[in-house]
Image (cartoon, rainbow, N blue to C red; front, side, top):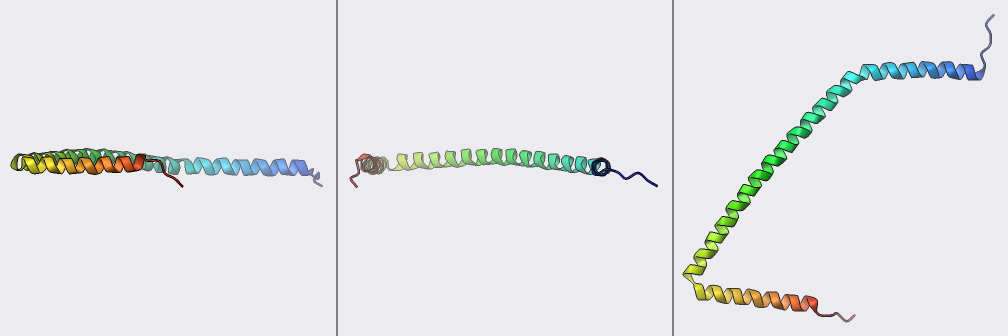
Length: 108
């Protein structure tokens, strides 16, 4: 005849079995997790390189467009200097009007 186990002993035995099963599953899953971590690391590294390359290309494009706009503005100013001065005066007047309108106190 077997000795009856107390509930605490039964729980301890069950917990030990569960713990062993969890440790075994973790041991078996470790290589898969390591492969997943390597793939994620590679993907993140690739995205970082792609972002860096995109930023470099964007900076080059922005510099090119800025140079082109500057060249066009210089050409227009040389071709029609008085017209350019009047345009600048108009833009300045509009900017001053907007600033004064935004700075005035508002009554509710």
